[in-house]
Amino acid sequence: MLNHKYTTINRVLENVIRDTGFSEEIDFAEALEWAYRAMELIGAPQIYIEKVTDGNKELGHSNPVEILDYKGEIPCDVHQIIQIREYYNRTSLREANTQFIYSTNVNNIINNDDLSYRINDGYIFTNFKEGTLEIAYYGFPLDDAGYPAIPDDERYLKAVESYITERIARRLWLQDKLTTDKYRALEQDWLFYVKSAKSRAQMPTIDGMESLKNQIVRLIDKPYNHSNQFETLGARERLRITNFNRIL
Image (cartoon, rainbow, N blue to C red; front, top):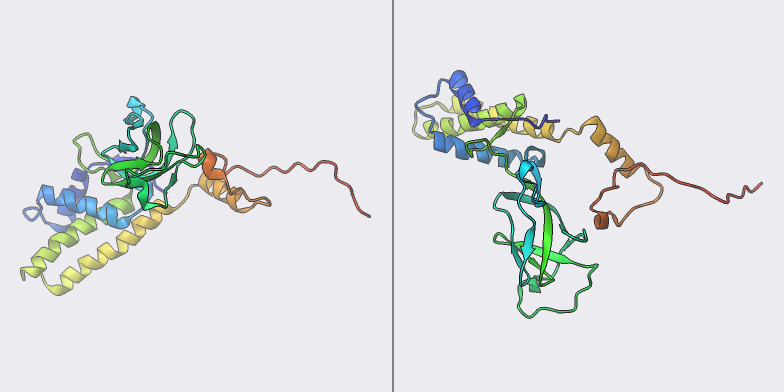
């Protein structure tokens, strides 16, 4: 479970220098790339910033995506799409199964209850010609300078630190400036902390476990939650039994 607070790459590099003595070996641009790669390798979606294209500038949200001629441009900071709905009538879109959604030979007869899309090369392609979309997505966290922001959690910081250390050590090892035993020790640190950070990020809160429990402990399935954007998926089931006849 993360606290959803972030810190800068400078804090990580300070830890690397203090713990390893590497200073001249550190290149800031390379460290940024390695920090980004470490977060990708950890692979926990909980570290990313949840955003919606609803035009809320105070939260840094982009404007709703306009669809013109079956095509619209998605925000440049999209890391992973969560869900998409039509902005005005709040109809959920599903991911299209057909590859012909890109074709200009389109079907003009569209069921308004079956809106679909596909993402390709920074654009969204839909089965309707014009419209406005609200996209919920994960965005990569950035600090005020535009550099990758690191989750302010000790295990996560240690994972990013150990990956940068391992990358530097591997270069020195390939140049015969570091023994194999020392490199393997630093490599094992990274392999341990990457799993530790991912487990930490994926640990649900008590409130999250309550929603998960409500999804599982049910008598009646709810297979159509996608249509209301899963708003009530984690709500407690309430059964009302009326006109109950007891059989003796």
